[in-house]
Image 1 (cartoon, rainbow, N blue to C red):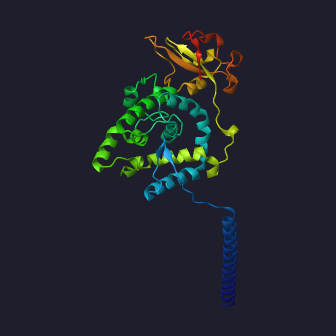
Image 2 (cartoon, rainbow, N blue to C red):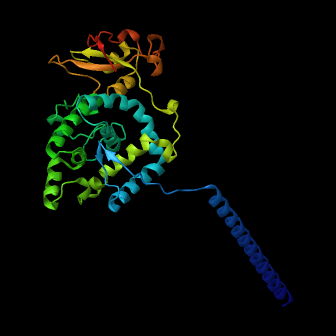
Image 3 (spheres, rainbow, N blue to C red):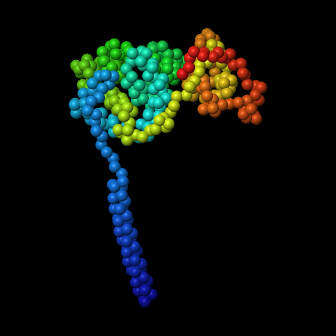
Length: 341
């Protein structure tokens, strides 16, 4: 009986001690959490953004005074400002690719603001959408062929930045002639000319900003405007991207190919570059070979400074590869010295 009382007493003590420890631990955590929260609030700030008082797209005024326009623009400015990694990548890529895109837009009479359309379409990368839209300008196969692009198993010029930009310009010129302003031309790039015309007629309005549209097209122009605003004045939105951080243009020269190439790995070796490098600079070449029985002339870009991409030399080939087996006459390439990126 005494043993039972002793055991009972010990159990009570243990429970009380455990409860005391639990209470002390809980109190400690609450105090620590409070200090942590104070430090967080003192150190970390997230700000709302000022909406620009005046904006335009391709010289066409944006009705900022309209509450709906302001709130939609606010949304896209917030998304792109606080998705910092994406917006920094946009700034870095823009340095390299705008230098190629801008002159093509100018040559075709397309306002420079349309370079931002390419950013929201693809982020300046050769992506493929679930629907099959491809390249910087997200061109569908049928549309690409309609506007002069070669699209086959071996060659897909939707991946060719210069040629796909030319095709986009043809579309935008046609859209501008149809709608009479660049804002609607841009919106039609997302939903198609027929679809946009149908909505303008059905809703009995004449401007993009008065249209009730599907979610994607309703956000489309505001996404362009937000990217334009941030990339034009990045410091205003807290971005500190140094010039040396941006992706610089890599100078290339053109090699004309007018015959079959049996193996692009061999072909690349002729220029002391890897197959990977050849495909990076010529993503429109979709196979490891090119059947060119018609003798069509293709211009292939080769980086001038192979040190930037890692040059391949005969003496650096792996032991398992016999240099004598490399076909150094593949495609009998010709240098086109008049065409330099």
